[in-house]
Structure formats: C-alpha cells, structure tokens
Length: 426
Image 1: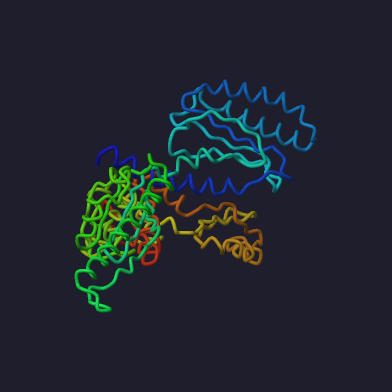
Image 2: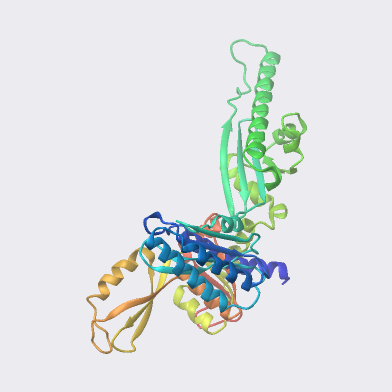
C-alpha cells in the first residue's frame, strides 16, 4: 500500500478529532464577555522560546487591564501557557501548535492543545471573549469541487460533489410540448415550436450552470464538470453555445445515464468512478463495499458489534476499523471513591446525564458504598480510533452521506472491522 493511501487513512481520524474539538471550542465563551480567552498559533519549527518571551511581554501589558477579574483571568491564562510551553522541545513540531487557554463562563481554567490536520500557516496571538478557530476551520474545508449535471429534454438537475458530501442543488423542468398534433397546426410548425422550447430550456440550463458553477463558487475550487443523462440532449447541449466558455472548459466527460433528477445524479457519480476515484466520497463507498463483499462471501475476515470489535482490537487482529461519524455514543468510566472498583460502559450521548442520576442511588458492588461517580467521558469514535492506532490498525471514519455509510450506521450500529486473521467472533 503506498504512502499516499496510508496518509489518507490516518487523516480520516485526524479530521474527525479536529471537527469534534472545534465544535466543542466554538461553544465556549468567557465570563461576562470579557476578553480573557487566549488563542495561540505557532507555525512549524519556530523557536518556542520566542513565543514564551512574547507571552511574558503580554503579562506586563496585562497589568494595565482595568477590570480586576479580567486582569486576573488573563494573567492566569498567560502563566498557564508559559508554563506549558517551557515543558516543550525547543522547536514547534512539523505541523506547528495551536493552543487555547482561558477561564470559560463556567469559571474553570481550560487548556486545549488541538490536533492538526495540516501545518499551521500563520502566527497568531489573540485574547478575546471566544476562541479563534476560523483558521483551523480552513483545514477542514474540502477545496476540490466537482460540478454535476444530468439532463434530458424534460428536466435538468445540478449538484456538487465536494470531499465526502454530495449536495443536490436544484432541478428545473422544461414543460416542452409532447410530440403530437394540437390545434390544427402543421407538423412542421409544431416541430419548430418544440425545437424552440428545447433551445430555450437548454439556454436556461446554461445560464443556471454559469450562476451555480461560476458566480456562487470560487472558480479555483471547481476542479471539473461532468454532464450526464439519457439520449443525445447532453451532447446537443455541450456542442451548442449554451454554456459559458469558462464553464465549458471545465467539462471533462459526457456520460450516459438511465435517469435524470436526483436518481440520475447518483447514477452519474457511480458511472464517473474513474474520474472521481480520489474523492473521499468514492473512497468511503469503496471501504464499506469491501466490508459488505466480505460479509456476502462469509470469508470470516470481518466482525462487527462493539464487544466483538474490542476483543479483536485487543488481540491485534483488526486490519481496518470502520466507524460511522454518526455513532453518537460516549464511553464512560465509573469509579468508587471508597475502594478500587471501576467499570466501563458505552451509552448514547443523551443518556449520560441519566446515568449520573442513577449512580447517586447505586451502591458499589465491592464495598457497598454510595460513592460511585463518572470520572471519564470519551467520544466512542475517538476512544476506539485511538485504541486501534495503538495496535497499528488503520482507521476509517465514514460519513452518512453515501448509501453505504447509512447502511453501516443503521444495519451494523456504525462499527465494523476487516480482520488480519480469523477470530472466535469473525
């Protein structure tokens, strides 16, 4: 397997972890809207000592803050950052560092060292009422976009395929008259009217294509356009003067499909697999299809279900762990404060609070005390993903944007694994 594919595999979990981290950070605010939350971006291989000195200088400036509470919170955050930076190697790592620190509205001092997908491009120090995550959001942005059109004389549907997301934008209809005589018109005149309506419809398709693919989208993000549909309408449309030349230059193929509208878009994607093969959308479909093929052949080299997968991971038997990003569950660790009793369980996220209420009424099965509490909560995708990486297992996080991704979540609980060798549960 080449290095490029390996990078994509590991990047799947990295992107998921960054997305979850940003969702959490973007909810956090400072106390009373005060500017005491620090965002620090350190580019790759920069001297850490330079940033320590800058923060020391900021400590001096912070003494001028009029509000006693804000001043104290800013100074605490700066001291915390300085102490942590001094514990690091002399240079920032190959992707750089992005650190967030400050007292949030619940009164707690928080520190976050965010996992990065790409190297940090900019140096940044900001003290504000919220954390500045916009530059990290850029790392998650899918930049390559494919435009899709399926059309015949009756309808045209437009869509974008971007990364792992297929977005059907709009369908327009022609309402062209059927091929039969009406109102005593001559056949020739009637055909002319039909051709005129077809011409006007294709002109409308071209104008909408220009708007969607040029005006509503950054031109540098549009990698290519694929046009599909039954019959010869797509060829007539492409060969005519309906498309803006800048849009026409992006057309890479005309493909026959049996359908139009949304069903036609999905068919067009399937028939364009050779063009779209490097997109995450197609990669996710291939990953789940491989699992389903093994399941159909009953090879024994796969397993699914949380307990079965955990055991296979502990044995080092998993080659590829497949997890749905729709798997909204949390792994919790329960501990007794009176003895060394511990237990772990997985719950839907919305049930964690109820579990905490139940623990108040439970007694420790070992020492019978009533001091059971949850000491740790971890997103299950993160927890299993990191466990897998410890055993050298490839991890694939699958969205629900494809039919295969939806099937993984609904039919297999969002957890599946392709094995290196057969186990008792395979």
